[in-house]
Length: 226
Ligand code: DX5
Ligand code: ZN
Image 1 (cartoon, helix red, strand yellow):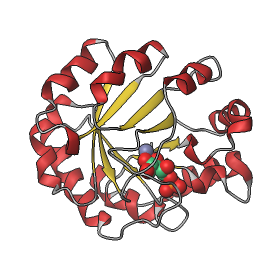
Image 2 (cartoon, rainbow, N blue to C red):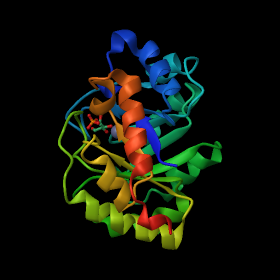
Image 3 (cartoon, rainbow, N blue to C red):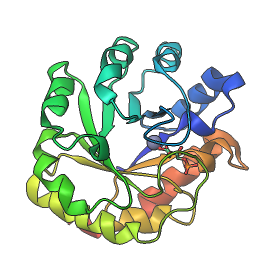
Image 4 (tube, helix red, strand yellow):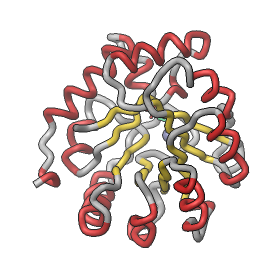
């Protein structure tokens, strides 16, 4: 089963609760919350108050993508707001092991993200410490960017490493996931797809967008499952 994680960054915030209920009912596996600090990425987005507001709206996991320079500073706030998964960036944490263990010590899931210019091999030593590896398929900071084509090979390499070292680790991709990129990225090895624009700005609406991506993802060939 491939999981769809709608990124609320692309949602109409005046109707956030309603839209999250819609993607939840349409089969979204979790809700992806993009947190930006204006330092690690050149943009600001949202804080734990958004998670707190969404917590009574959905029972699906809230997954927080911390695109910030000092992620540990925000753990308590997001955990008490009801976050289920915290994803930190390898770029700001040369040795993330203690922080990853800290997240897991609360019974929460730990994710490790890395940008398109980070050698994929650099994530290998941490694969046993995480529940999710997030391969960025755009440079983070903004929604609506084009998928970087080189990412297919990076995803395939990461899938091999995950298969060898920690098969229960999820392989998530984030950035430019749409009707064109879903099938090849799933075939390359992704099992969690973050999508903002192609869901919340879909012609068929967020529920239609969620269902369409889910259907494409489910019918894609998955040679890595054999
Ligand atoms: C990138 C964010 C993504 C982004 C995805 O900075 O981490 O989650 O919002 O948006 P789309 O799907 O529009 O590329
Ligand atoms: Zn994200």
